[in-house]
Length: 133
Image (cartoon, rainbow, N blue to C red; front, side):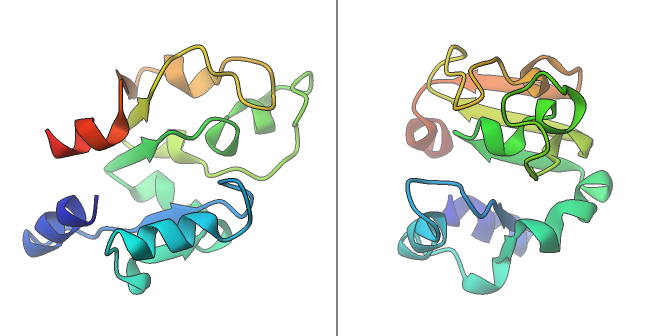
């Protein structure tokens, strides 16, 4: 993913990584993983620092996330994690979601509605293999 970001930056694109505070198995895990992958720290933003920018973002790439990018957290009072702040990726012009399977419902126990939005494409399989391809 660091190579993709580097190539896009070389082409003059504004590349940013948005991190949800509870993403991963422990707080800060994704920050560490991105650093280990070689992603420059100045490209990594916390949710509250990047969320309002999605409406002006052309393309968003979501890798493996479910609840942390679910519009149901804002739109569906029946959702078990309704009211939890999320990365509002669905507001981007186009969203690509990389997931191992469509059946993973996360902690919410329900399908993520963004997977079925018109501006979202889902690529199933191993995210590393997909990014390397």
